Image (tube, rainbow over all chains, first blue to last red; front, side, top):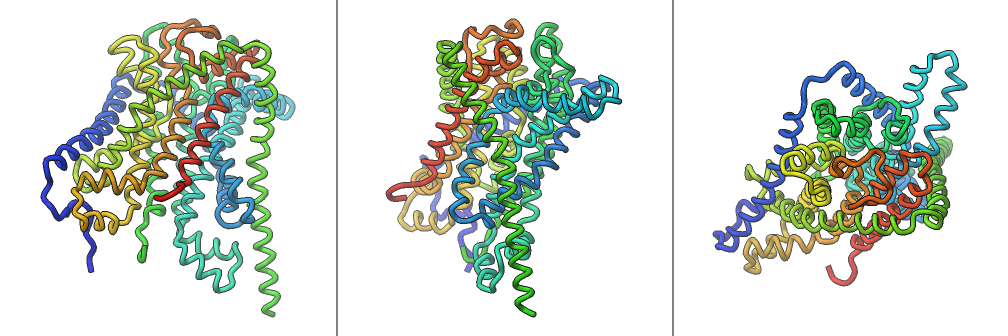
Length: 289
Length: 267
């Protein structure tokens, strides 16, 4: 028996109200498409070819976001596993609630904390460990590392909550069947859940990478790119926040445009891949539901 | 023989559980330290310096997030319902793609684009344009979440509505949206909380102020206040005070999100 294959085959002819309703909804969906085109067009209009300095900033973005993602992924996946499968049943709900709360903490607050607590410590550590390096090199390494530490803390809750959604979407029957066969929680995860969700988990990590690459305000604050004795920015998003005043004073927005367009493309690629992978697991049509 | 295998599996399981718990500690410990710093320093800052300006910035933030949400949440939810209920059409497919793409655009990039589109082209209305930028962050996310939620509504629910003689618009507006209501309301609160804390778009909208801006300037918002004060080491107390209020606002909104997600009574 084939079910109705979606609303396109609505059995009754549309009334006038149906037509009006559809027109309004279509206008809203169209507005989203127009907004996307407008954003992309505005960025392309403002941009010019990137200079070597801007290319170096994109390199910095990749390094800092990459380090943060590598550090955050295992922690976040561990937290997701705790929340869905491995944690004691009393611990799961509070941890899930706290992780969810952490995803709405504003980036500026992380930036403030990074500027006060993370960045000075990383600077001091680099000063003692890398004393043979030149000052410029050391400052660059210290900046990238403190950005990476802060980004790790910022994206870990996001990755954890996305990964938990992926794990929850695994077919419940499979979990029950494996329990019935006497599997431990870890057995069940490793042999039953993981094979069904690994691409989705990878997608959650990719979403975290995209968020880390696009984070500007927190990175700029934590690595000291704003204020009186501003340091040179290290990532593209940080440079956009840092270059705002110069662009405003000179009226030349093309450098920001180049950075913005590059970031737009980088984060779009990472996020679209991540979204597609996560949604494929979450929206999988399961027989019997 | 078998018992050795079982024992080994139990050991591995215990190690895995321990590792997962260690990950939780590893994530929550820095957060607890940061939260302690935020509360103690913030309380000191509120008592010391920043009374009135924090209150005004808080009102500014609530107004910005309120205007943006009032515009963007209905727009996003309506668009999301259309995207799912009329899926298969070109417009729905384009809308779905655009919503997915726009919902994860970095805040700095949104700020730059809105600056190029509105501030440079139309003129300076920093407050309204700030709300427009936040709306541009909220609407795509809401559309994406709504479409996702509507997709998980079983087709049999729509068929039941058809069997009762409901027209298509009634089915969408009074059946499908009822089913997805809790999920959408939760997403709305979370998204609004995130928009209330967004700083980068607002930085682009407040035109031509001195750098660093004064703590007491017009159309202020909490994130801006945190940002300004954080970039000046001598104003850190004010930064902590504003940050504490900002986190409280976001926390209250995410509490509403949790409450909205647990339906009471009939649904």
